[in-house]
Image: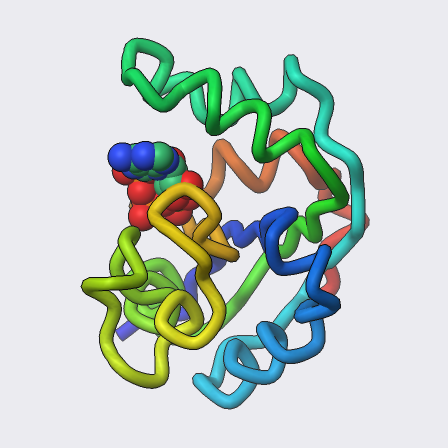
Length: 140
Ligand code: ATP
Ligand code: MG
């Protein structure tokens, strides 16, 4: 077991429904600490860079439109095996397949509007955190 950091986004479908606190409660109840957090409007360029791995997918344009459609809350989460732990807490990409008690099961509207993002590896977590936070904004 090791203490890790992962990158999280509370997506526009959740901020629109005033669910930031409800999502944060699930995160904290799962034992993850929110060590950095800010509410921003993502630019198209930021969203295209962030989801660049999906550039060739048919849903890419829709995904960028969605991620820039309203405020998001970007976060750094810290805890034991935080990367995998947060993926478990989020649940499957498609809320129809998400386990009970997960954020996506509770709150997601659809496979696209699925309320949260979480890094899929320790390496990607470091890259994603660096895209949105400087070191002195993260207080563990
Ligand atoms: P995220 O990267 O946001 O944490 P994920 O790792 O569970 O989600 P990915 O396969 O990386 O899933 O897809 C990135 C995001 O693209 C999804 O969270 C969702 O918002 C959107 N997406 C994925 N598949 C589809 C699809 N078939 N139709 C529409 N949007 C999709
Ligand atoms: Mg992903």
